[in-house]
Length: 255
Ligand code: PGA
Image (cartoon, rainbow, N blue to C red):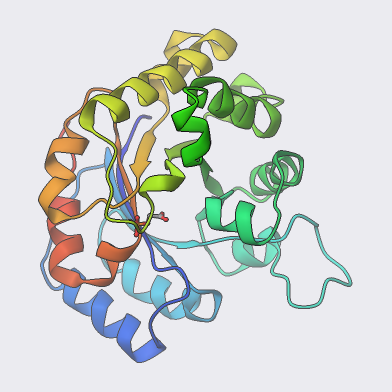
């Protein structure tokens, strides 16, 4: 089902006390989400269990991991596996955030392994794609994104791809205060849906949520989320401020 999703990505921010206070403030707003909407909170690993105890109390609120290992289990000191996430009841995981790709050299091939492990362990994955500024300047963003999708996702069957959410995050708009224009966002989201449709058919493409990420905030969320091929957002900086993120959740399309 094509859901409208507001996903918070805390990255490496907040202490447990700060994170709990933020969550409690957000939840105290009694936001009503229907079953075609979701608020997802990707928090640091040590906070997952605590955070899940908070999101479990709010309807259509979920806790997510920001990353996971590309291996099943074994001698990988410091890594966290998908099966560990499943074992504590986590339902969502982010895969392939541009910061993971850039700082930890995660390639499309490594991400394909994570995609498979997410499936095996019944996690819904928010798969991130997005181009750097040099690619956008060279007007090569469409083929760049297509390659990211093909090399990490398109080995999946029609049934499997339905478990995935795609997040388009132009790297030049992440944490920079720069937002892609509405036209740029809609054009890329329509392109992504077309690429998915070419591979899996229109019905499946129409059922997949495509989130936008990159300096989404309370002031621009409603405009961005109203675009026809945008199904919500993946939000970094503004997700750390209760008022901001509450307004962002409330900007989700309602049908
Ligand atoms: P930002 O981050 O909202 O701070 O730009 C988005 C993201 O990296 O997911």
